[in-house]
Length: 309
Ligand code: ADP
Image 1 (cartoon, helix red, strand yellow):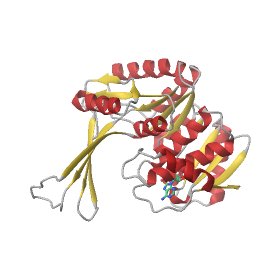
Image 2 (tube, rainbow, N blue to C red):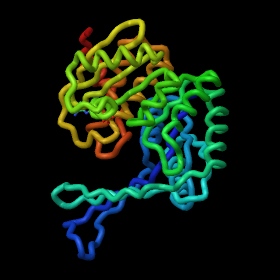
Image 3 (cartoon, helix red, strand yellow):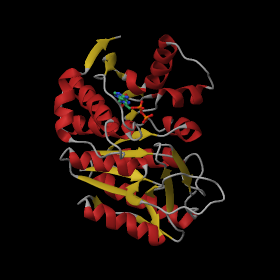
């Protein structure tokens, strides 16, 4: 089993409206909603890839119930911790020109007692999981060591931790030696406080993280693919097929899902990288994050080029 952890999930609601103008009344032409948050996107893709997955995290209120209901409709298993606040609503208003305007709620603040229950839940699920994937930013009320604590706990319980987050929470979690990390290039720049990074500088930081004990590191580069490195085997540049991207939001989550699915199926190192890149590209062709078409992955897989670095 693979567990995905989303500490601040959301209802992603999309309104289609003719024209958006401040101070006006707008009649919505079409409303769609989906369970959101990076870890939930990972769970959606793992489920589509036929993996046994459980989505966990912190949910509350009516929006929390709705997230569970939407996951039930998709037949995705879930086991969340309830909190007293209301889970967030993220609203994307798209006009006739295709221009999107987003309004994102912060989500509930988490109390110490709620955090304790989340840690216990993660430790329990980790005992039944080969991988536990942590994705996304931290909710209010938790300090920057939150992922560090969870990575430590789940790896003590025997699962491998995969981490996709940014900033201080990412840096702190490195001390717990997650099995795999997947920052994108902007996140690496932000972590290092650098505006520009050469390939050599990316290589240096990868080596530093390996020395910390991280087994797999993927630095994703959007349409340019990803640099993927394993501690004892060196690095590859993986180049995706050229596509007309529709919406790349969620491509990083799909990349993580493809990679972990490959690892869970004991695929070769090259196959894991190809699956990840193919899933990222397949996601970029869809309007909604995490709604990949499995046939596309089979189509893209052989088109992913691997260059030894
Ligand atoms: P994130 O969503 O975390 O910012 P990226 O945008 O780097 O992640 O995307 C993750 C992966 O998805 C990339 O490494 C790449 O393999 C694939 N991908 C993303 N955008 C495209 C695109 N426009 N064309 C082809 N592949 C893409």
